[in-house]
Image 1 (cartoon, rainbow, N blue to C red):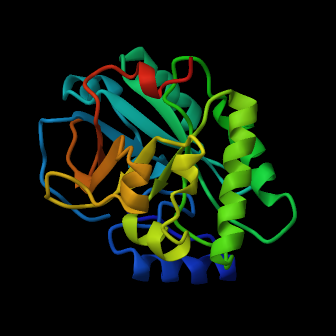
Image 2: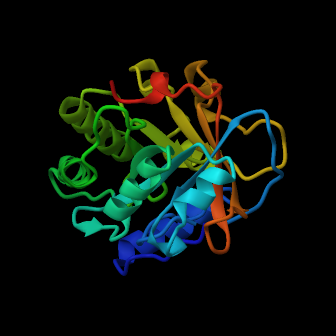
Length: 253
């Protein structure tokens, strides 16, 4: 799950800091989704998350391999659009794969940045009924303090909730959340109960921050950055969905 960085100095600095503190989370930003392995398992529903770095995907083969869902990068910051998003959405849907979209956060101190990034995501991803709920990919701080970063995340989440009509989920690693978000339970307490945790491990369960996400635990788990799936060249991020094969509880009505 190796993701190159965008050339803004503050973003690079915060990315390096984030990776140093969060070895289980690779930078999905700067136009990719990023690396670290783990053992496979059959307990949970299997899925993948992808960006343009995966190149051409044969969705028929992916579905034939038993992959049930895919979460694709749609946007990053205020302007970037993943060029594969629209065609991937069509291809996955045509092969019965549940679909979701994520936004790679580029927090900024500029007034209104979180709302602008949220609008860019919604206008591009066009989340609609039946899709897996939107995800905020939180890996870099943009130099914001813990308090300021919490405020930024709250603004992004609130804006997407207003526009889409459902509460988004957060993608993060245990170390990032503990180090840069102060291990807060506030988001789970405010109703953002769905957590997509990034913890690359062969253990049967991931580490979950924020007091087991306010008692709700994890819903999606990115367990490896190097899963081999027919129809996708090279490594791809492997994910698990916790609750059987029914996606209604994590989908937009």
